[in-house]
Image (cartoon, rainbow, N blue to C red; front, side, top):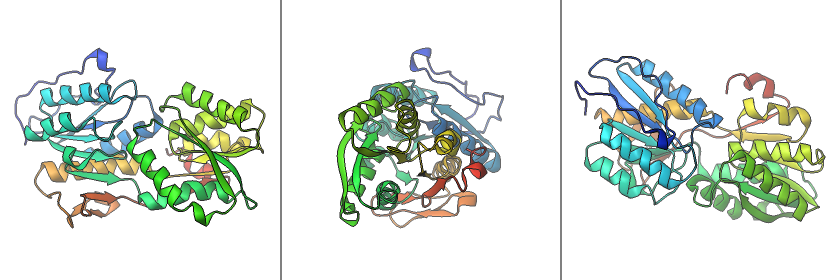
Length: 333
């Protein structure tokens, strides 16, 4: 649904949102809003780069990169309502809550706006499709394997997740629990939540080490939590005793690998994820593709994604980073 002669509206300061790339655009440009969990997070800034790459490749596309300053559903809903008022063509959202965003996103779809979720999904009734960064079972197995590989005799591990309502982290932890039998001797002693805030994640990691003096590993399936936990281990003088692993960015985790606070971690490429989400949103908004079970939707240079019965698809397998390859990737994302 392309529109002519519209006026760009900035999101209110109360949302802490930022409209990027506000250069003059052609009247017929498609506007795709990339809504992230919170602004100021490296993972999402890298995804924004990928979205801009896709927009340049497609031509005639403007990316509105935005999100709240905090990590609550309420703040994301405010952002979404503002985008509806702006009559954007598509919303691609990484959700802070599976269900809470549904009413606002349903309103968007009722007004003809294409809605997809990516990274962290919303319930099916609140979107047309969801793009998982990887297969949830593969991610769930990966995060526990990263810890277990360095604990041949078993040991205590703890989870430092994002928020209690983070769709993707909860699914990955659930998938991890399903395969715990494959890792005898590994005991998960606690799960805590840092709300994807660096200072809270740091304090939660400190608390884990204090409460469990024999703790061997902290698994953080969040790029904010893993960096904070690694710093907490360094500051506690427990490098070599507590291994921090999970999902992180090479650019942010290079120091932790160098210090020994982390022996290895994994992630998909967030640049590719933002690129793929934008390609899918464009295909759906332009009518080139339809989100339905079995549909194969192009993701440009990333190939294509095939939707399952829940209109979900996976982009790529996670990749492990360690001292052997961190220098090759830390300057990329």
